[in-house]
Length: 485
Image (cartoon, rainbow, N blue to C red):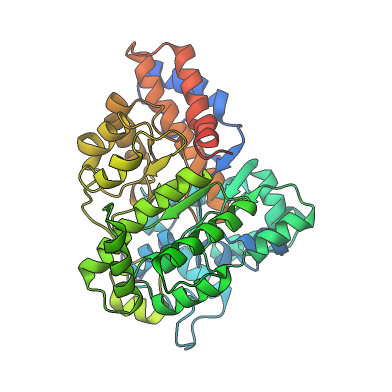
């Protein structure tokens, strides 16, 4: 007899109704702590969203066109979704992801959606399921969990709503109560969509962030061509190191004029360097001429983090460092589909020695903020919390990427707070490409923080009025302050 859970047979998913979103989800089990969590959450759940770092597409807000279909909204841009499906044998072509070589992929959005729905059980227990369920219930009024049995009905209902004016990007932005949202762009971007937003008269605050990786990382695809274009755009001769640095200053100033309050740096490690100027110039010449070894490339990235810190002290842009991801781990997918397709893997990351050259120069400087992120949780108590608990310039970013989850956020608070407290952190940012997940992610973060604070109140380590104040800071005020929003 075949198993009732055989892949050959459709799973029978019973309707869940409103219980898809239980009002006490993520709250403590112990009754008194749960009651406190409810009260704390009631103070923060409707606060505006400050989203200071993310990867949504600015053209959505500039053009304000309807999202074309559910698959384009929920499946194709979300590498949390695509990597899970790929891990279970669903090809990216079947999900409609465009190939680099232009070969055909699935073009029927309904078929992509059906494939997603057939595999929705794969997301059980993951934060992705929580985010998706939140969007399905709160935005699209779907009270039955997605499955192969209801895939077409869900597709039709979402499609009908997406065709209405109230589901266009700007309307959703306002419905989500987003006070400010930052996208992330390369120095080679002309920011035309940000200019369109500014000139449109719409009062939604969408700003950019300066991400110089394509012209800082010698191992970035097309680095030499990127440098030439960089110099042309900035009107600087990037043949010299000083001209190259001036090009960064000019582009940073342009980004700041377009609303940017931060920079972002996605390096393999947190290594920094402070080379004598003659050595830095010689290294740049080697890098620019394509003669850099892997160690040279790492040293150049390290030097540029310190140069970027110096510029942040000059222009006031908050600096973010997202290290520790081994990018494009799957060479076949990278060759076929390009960067940012989800095949990125966390690595062990060292901070105390790596950051010392930068901190020796700027660790005590007033007016400079460096927000540190990690994909290596073992560094929380050993390095990151002690560093942020000492250096005035350092703040800790929230759990990122693989740890943007209930368990990841809870571990972060438990390990970091004892040494760095709450006020050497920057609240929450969603760091997402998936627009409809923004309110869901912030709701999860607010619930987790309220649950943690409730435990402190229940164990008599905080008074409840103190916990209320901290909850407001974590949900809203810290991000707004740290990112100068």
